[in-house]
Length: 112
Image (cartoon, rainbow, N blue to C red):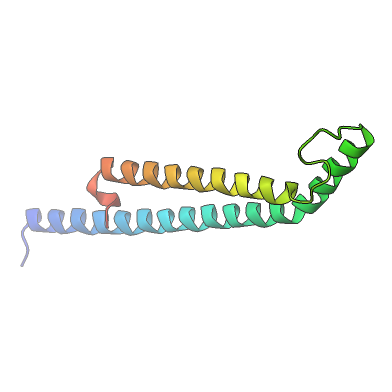
């Protein structure tokens, strides 16, 4: 037979366990959603980039900007994709660092 104190401890322990499971599930959902959004953004940018490069090349030829380094080059799209990929990589790295720091600073219920 359990005493009242033991029952209360068991109830609090079970509530903490359930809250930890719920928070872990929320964190997984947030991580999956963030990955899906970033992946979708990369795919959308990759699909849109050829049209953007064609517009820029067409506009530079129309505006007689022959001194531009991109005027006769088809590599503008690749350069822009590389710069965007680098910036996104830095942003994801910083986000992951901040998320880890936030999880470390938070109470132990978020830690696995």
